[in-house]
Length: 363
Image (cartoon, rainbow, N blue to C red; front, side, top):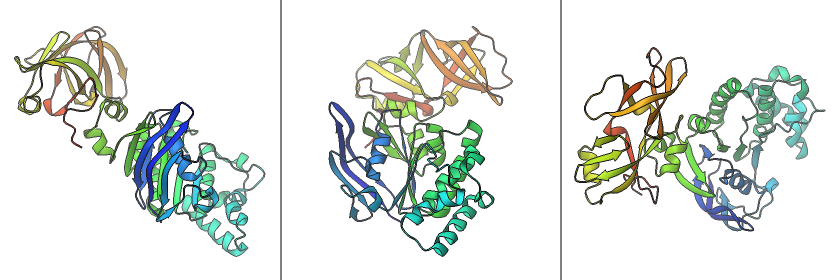
């Protein structure tokens, strides 16, 4: 298998900079997920690696071979698209065998590899069926089989599960991760679903507006987001953000209707910073909700309650701002009820309002 290296790649469409100086490595044998909102450039980058789009500048390497300018069919890659793109008049066997037949592989070898691929994907009993006789999950497995059977150096996957229903998507996510680990093929996977990205990825590359925002393991990006965009994108529900004023005299963050005293960790970080506006970040799962006031808590009122089964997701109001927090499923609350929020210092994030970079971020 092969490592993929992208070096200073740019793609310009008239006035739109689709890719802006992208440099990153897709490690050999790992599953790397490109994640970001629609229009962030993740699919453009994937198609540039595939050879379907030529970069305006920069270089792309698969292994030690530079491939920008090399036709897609000479890059030894396999791509799985959002649509299954199966041939409706062919059986499952023929659909999987098609890329081998196109390269004039001997018939005995084709049969052996198709049967082996079907066994890996657990679709041996479907080889004589046509696509119209298959479920969505089965068709997706056939599309994966057509990619696997070629034994490529790299898999490129462009939102391959997005056409499946929610329950089947969860099942296929687990199977896809197991399959990639079993095969050990370098895989680049594009999705806009951050929950899917967190579940699948050995490494995440978060993109926005044609630029890479942060690269790292899923847990690293969750715990140590570089900026407001990553903090708000990774996590479900996303991180809460509150505009506050830093008061060095009071050693506190002052917001609408509350004053939050800072502990030694944040006071040390802010020791050279003048008074001014900051963005406070706190994840919903890190907020403790109480029915009774106590020192250092933040007053709020219940706005909306969403019953999720094992827990309740609360929307609470602090002045004009809305925050989200989790409480146990048996918590008894009413709309408009006063509650008090406890923010634990270790779970807080502070961001510069101009650069939007975390104050605790170290390059």
